[in-house]
Length: 129
Image 1 (cartoon, rainbow, N blue to C red):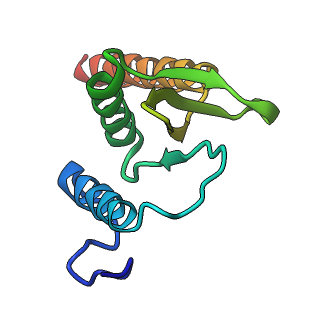
Image 2 (cartoon, rainbow, N blue to C red):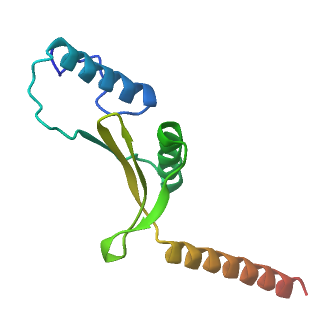
């Protein structure tokens, strides 16, 4: 058995894809328990793809499953924000994250949308007279 199993998905489109790959890794490690890891700290980093709401939903679902609570927005360096969370399962650290729009920018966009709606309503009322 080798690590390049053609039956495994090349991307984890579903939780089942991720689970199959992790099971494959576990099978390889079980088959040769002699691999010297020393004092290893294995980690897994997961970055979902899709729209921002889809990525946030994926992160929250995975973290609820693994630790019982969703991710949260975190300010990073340079004004960047991530929706993320970490959990340790056994000896494996798992980090799940994605870049998101800053809370200030989200609030500004919502305010602009409200003002645009108000302007459209006012303009429609003016034309109706």
